[in-house]
Amino acid sequence: MSPIERWSSYVTWLRENVPLAWENLAPPATEAAIAEVEQVTGQTLPVSLKEIWRVNDGQKATMIATRHAPAVPCIPTLSFLSTAMVLEIWREWDGLRRSESEKSLAELQSMGRSPDGKTRALYTHPAWIPVWSDPTRADFIGIDLDPGEKGTRGQIINFGRDEEEHFVFADDLDGLLAILLDEVRSGAWRASKMPYGKQGEIDWFGDPKGHFFNALHRRWKATQPKSPAEIVKELLAEAKRLKAAKKPADALALVEKVRAEMPNLGAGGLQLHAEILEDLKRFRDADAVYAELVERAPKLTQHAVRRAGNLLYDMNDPTLAEEVLRKALLVAPENVDLRGMLALTIGPYQKRYDESVKIYAELIEHDERDIRAWTRLAYLRACLGDVEGALANARQALVLLGPDPVEIAKDDRDLAVESAFYVYALAEEQERPAALAMLRECLAIGMRTIDWDYVPVVDLARSRGIHPAPLAKIGQVLNGRLRVDAVVWED
Image (cartoon, rainbow, N blue to C red; front, side):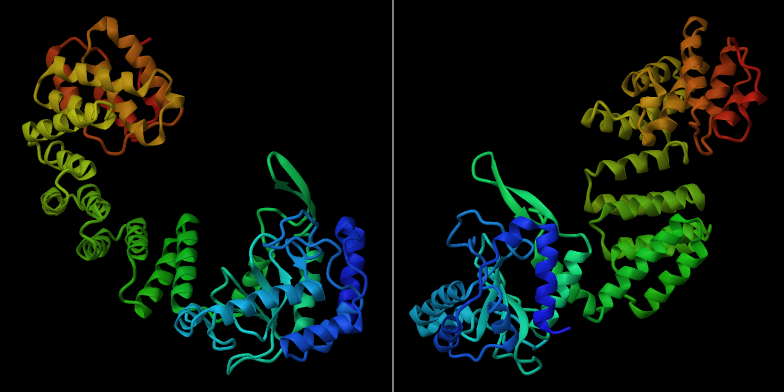
């Protein structure tokens, strides 16, 4: 198909799908108008452009940056420039080039960039002929008649006020028209309305929030060889997908491939590596990756917290977890997550209850709505034999959690189970039914704790000799080790 045949096909599509844009196409240009463009610019124009102008000399009404009168664009989101408009715009830019001092022009031209050497690395050039224009900005799609060393005369490029980096979107006008036809036939560009003026709107062609420049750039990007960074990004995205699909072995193979080619993998990739190793229960290997993360980015405290969690929950090494946390606290002494993890490490896991109570109390002083700190304080006070203190803290946690378990945030669900159990286990008889109801509701919607040590609370309740329920078994239910119906519950 020749360029003029492609244009004819486009015009037919326009008539059938965006009739207002079709109606705005101008009649043919005169030979004199076409010749004037060549004479003024000093360029011999491609035959294909002249043939199209001989059918439609741009648009009847045209909206450009210097003339904001509303007009329907005849190209999706872009104005199709007439011979007169091309001359007007070309003269404006030629005037800019001529009016600048030699130094100022050199500075201006230095702003231009060519990613592949196909265009000249300049900001503006007299041999760049605008054909399509952004209706609101002085940016253009046009024909490059003086390309760079790797380019081709007649190639289609972007240039203008905000287009400092120039891309070759097509080798010639025929290629651009092929893209245009493909785009509109895809259904991506339709007749629409665009906001205009105060609370008004005008007829438009294409999504007002979209831009045909972006469509051209996406197509250009798709033709470029992927950079190493892009390849790594794609492989890590696939590894993440495999991890989510419960295929950690496959995910690990991809991450290890990436690491072999890129030893200095970024923090996101390293964290993914560690998490996959945890999924595979290779906790020691995960710790080595977390250690690398912490060493490489000591100010990103979340990595120290993750490493401590792996050491604490999976490797049963609270001593090393404490060491990791205290070292991180030297960098960020006020970090709430680090302090909370440290309190958990030295309290429930190392039985240094008084030290842990002090940290949690400080966290609550910092944030009175810290539900986790209130819940942990309840547990620690129970470990210290302080029934009233444990009850007061657990009650406060339940107040903050709210009465409806369904409304409780996912990250707080284990705290709801714990707090309700502490009140149920330690309170006097008249308070237990409400706590038990809360506990049963939590269990009914799947809330559980994970390997939490309820023994100190159960022992404290037993020592008081006032609770008939099988609390130890209930603790196993809360941890998901027994079914709910394995316990005879109080009415």
